[in-house]
Amino acid sequence: TDRIELDIDGELTPVPELVGTKRADVLVLNDDDLTYAISRLDERSTDVALAYVGTINAPITRAVIWASLWNAVRDGLLDPRRFIAAVLGAVPTETEPAIRDRLLLFVAEALSSFLPGSVRAESHDQVLATTIRLAKESVASDADAWRAYTRAFIAEFAARGGDEYEAMVRGFAA
Image (tube, rainbow, N blue to C red; front, side, top):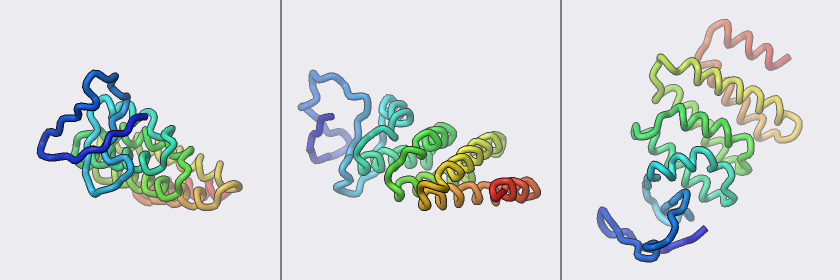
């Protein structure tokens, strides 16, 4: 991990310290969240981040990366299904409740606002299965996580509604 401090001036800002160095797998701007900035990950950083963001030790860096990924979904630059899959893979090991809770809200928003109806059902099923499993796994060990996962799956059931919702909630409660 290397850190370079610089001020951005204009559309392009040269970074002479990086000339001749090996390119990092992920380039994160503003990784300490020292200022308000909307930053974009390049394509390679996006691919690596989607696969490994949950393994980054620094919570603030994870939060900045997740925010960049979410902004890309919101702005139509990242397929919401890739984002949802990354969250579902990383959220079980997220150590910061605020990050976990925000990720679950992002998933709900991605499902309801950014996925075309034709692919929404499959993603709903993945979210439901994962959040139900995580709620059951955390019930005895982490009350906050249990509540977060339970709220997430109830919200997904409510979005779908109907008899399926009622049957699944009863099955979970049993």
